[in-house]
Length: 219
Image (cartoon, rainbow, N blue to C red):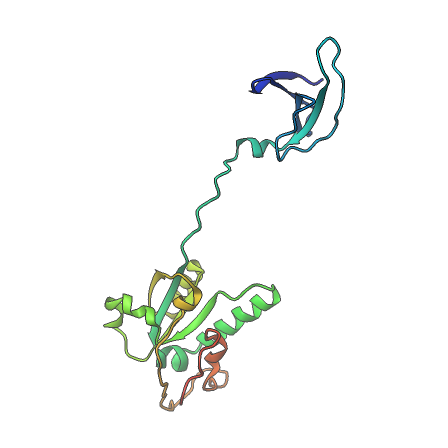
């Protein structure tokens, strides 16, 4: 059995609400003079009924309203700042010595491709944002390489996985600004003994993870 309660939205516009059986939505019934129109955003379900005993013709409009829309705020949320997280170390360690780094990056890239997920991690050689971190740069051998991502928890994982890296975060107005780099030449001495059970990385493997438009490394 439904119940109704009369409310007044504006002067001369009575409103009643009707609650149906369990599991159904809630309807709002507006009785408006024939020369009035419905407020924007309300869907008209039934219309036109003449009320006897009163002057003029009235329209009865039943509009379905989601209860969440009644209580939710119409103010849009503020846009979050573009925040980037990174781990950084010297290029020799990141690109030539760390045995698992290449494997971890290519596996993540493959996983993103299978899920049609947009890439959110990059390698940056001699990143410009390091100028904001003098306490980090004074501890770095150069050239340096940073792994940058918008995924903070994953960068935390990579810091623990790689171990010999430094980590922090920063904000930037655009992706281009966030991944800007300085010119650098990479030169790695040939390692005497490779102990990993798989072949040594090919020089330049990291170029697949450089930002779009970045120039390839020089030998």
